[in-house]
Image 1 (tube, one colour):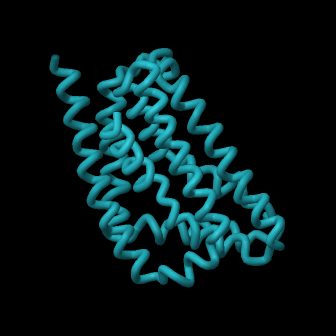
Image 2 (tube, one colour):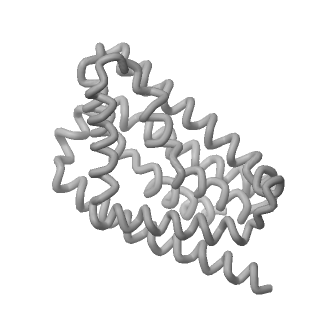
Length: 206
């Protein structure tokens, strides 16, 4: 169970990337009051948690209704996560997030950024949705399900703390250290993604 928790924790951490969300949120909420900034951070994490929980609990039924096998989803999800990992290693993911944040910030009428782009797609994006569905389908049983959900809750809590402390985090980390951490996490995510693909192929061939 400890191994499952650590594995799930690493997967959610590298996909949701709490340290990477912090600078984006700091830039988007620069003109807001501390109270408004805090409220948006809490709302963003709660909405993202609700989205991920729905896919965690009912994603398998959705796939079944669409006639998609779990093996196919594992392969597709693994490929998707591998592409995200490549973007992290070559710093393309950060650039895309910053471009998306700049477009939102450039729109004067957009004041509340908690739902878009923070809750979705930055926290509850395609990668995190695929990850939670893959981990839930791979670990059946009440205990293993609770372990995966516990790991997800832990990362969402870290994400909330990162958003609340976005300013100080940026001053401590700096752009260069953040880039190094992102690349290291990208390598880990690539390995996990390949494992998902291998599992999917193995299941489909048996």
